[in-house]
Picture: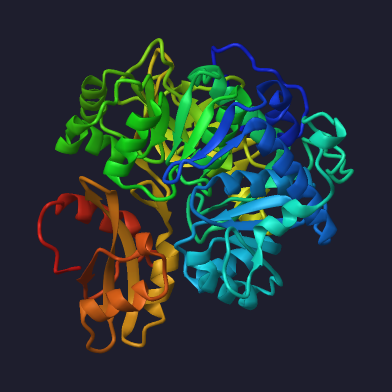
Length: 544
């Protein structure tokens, strides 16, 4: 196929100097000095930019002393805490790669990610230590560190004991410092992050992101969002998620803003953090925007400090977006992204919002709308699969050459698996998904994973899992199950729930005579998706 004339961002190109992540983020640490960089929301515990830069350098040295070096993988299974950033950037400064894991994963799920990533170190927190240790044992990870204190566990703080005090010796705060191991980073070639995504289909896969990917993304997002040293950002998006890891953290720290971390979302706690810290900016998922638009609790708090609320991970209706903006008195904007694109590929411009749109292309990003049947390129206003290209697009999937080839088309184009159109003004709109991925409150749920678990039950002959529209969650996973012997919905739901994180649990089961498949055995998932949409709001055969 000849390369057509794609849509291109009309924003000025960003700085493309090759630089490693930690060098990029902490270039101005010395100047920022005692300004608060990270604040633990629940406790108020604060790390200044000076303390953060020194702690990152010490962790890099501490990891190196334990044999952790270039290309090694450190896994983080933790809620949002200041130490998350210290561990992540310390590992990157040591030349390592960071894979963030949802702390709600079961031991089996976490073990699978650890093994696939090839992790040699796992960092967690006391409430999740038992699960982490069980997963580490299964995956052969010998080094487990805990943030805080727990009996029989090595404290993460032990990494900070390496070397003397840099400030006592009059050394500069920026990198490289006297403690940091002598590691040469090739920004374009060396991996920095390995988040896990289900992509357009199948089980979670490691997304290989280089230092250049992460730095380019921070520069691109900053060109639109304009975070400054005066901003106070609430970090509620999980740091193991692309938005938290690759937009909220780097954009805040590079700009010299103050980032207030929130370990676990609850509406009252979130509203209190915004009010008490006079927060100016945050990025949330659609259910939070829905609550901000309509929940009566919002009226009990002063949210007038907010200048901008971003929304990502799943599409948001234009009416809810506008209601939220009107209530808060600040813009509410959406973006379009994929883990395979580091995080964001398009964001709505602040000076020209368009409710319901997923934004305009970020600097240096190109897009095509491709006919999913004929393969040709489509013009403005016509719906097809969105393909994207830019400096933030992943290198590929870890150890998955076939999946990489299926997702990255010749010429460096990333197939999104989303049905979209771009209007005459260059605004992107998401219509539907070609990919099978279910988005529950912004979290990824892979149908294939749940189908495999269901089919492992002795009473199940065949199963298909599809999304059901839900006004609060966006989508919930429901199963269509054909059985070979008698079994109840509650038993099957419990069977799955015991083996997956809470957000992956089935929210309904339909018993069917036969799961629809093509003559070649391919699951006709779209037939079931349409059935769920048609029956939205009606009671299914069995509901949890």
